[in-house]
Length: 400
Ligand SMILES: [Zn+2]
Image 1 (tube, rainbow, N blue to C red):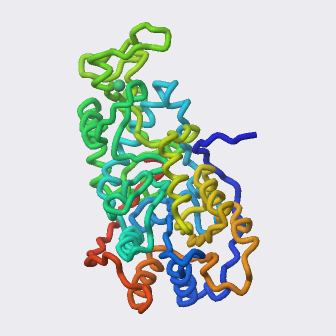
Image 2 (image 1 turned 90 degrees about the horizontal axis):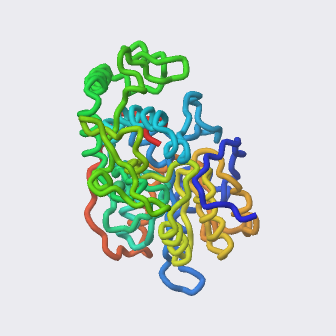
């Protein structure tokens, strides 16, 4: 049966990885293997080109929570319950809850910045070693860190909202202002919570200790302002010109006196411009990702367990094209043994590498090592950059 190209969380426990080559268990061994992986000429003798595929693991150093712990087990946070696309689309109450939580989480995400891994990828691009980036992350850190190195955002991006009727996009910043205007009690609460630092911790007990009340199921409890009162705006374009429905009639798009989407509306629902769980990836994005793999000589997988089928399938595509695969990830990766099954045990990185280390420590060191190497002349080397530290924690359950 053909599987849908859909974003679905994969919650099975993943086996611990086999390090490849064996010498890559130490930092110096890992750097040597990855340098070889990135720089040994392709079988045709041409300059090697690499596609990079990234996931939540590389944004941890920016303060964003990962879906998995180091042991490859699914999220420790038992309250995490991602909203599904069909639920969001079909249920006004579910949307209120989603946007209320997203409203609280947005400020922290907005402050978060790309980290050393993103900038190391930029530098590998400057060195001519990486030609394309495919990411499952929705935080837009790649395009911020390396605007000139193309990034395909497989699961979309949180920086915009998109209308589910007319596909109009709106900046999330402006949408946040609208949410604050429509929900003044929540806006005050958000300022109070930010002041207490309660959103800087993932621990429910610490959140409570800092003055944030949570229900046993982890929901934020605000007396007088429950989720059922939360309001969100309608798509301004659909409000001005209601779209035509499938049966040829005009859709109903109505708002209350303040401009909040009214429950009798049949269109004009805005959603985050991310591919929600249970939602299919748009065909042009899917094609672009497949083309990036087709065009590359090899695939470097960073900070992802390839838990979603859409990402795993790209690695499978590279393998079926007999392209070397390198993986740097803490914890196991879905089906990874199959990626290395035909590998000559005497190879030292050029045909495949598996490293279990944090990318934000390893990749900057890899860039330095490649730069010092006499064989890796920089094509378009540019100057370095300052890496800013960011301490805030952003929660996937508020932002997915
Ligand atoms: Zn619209």
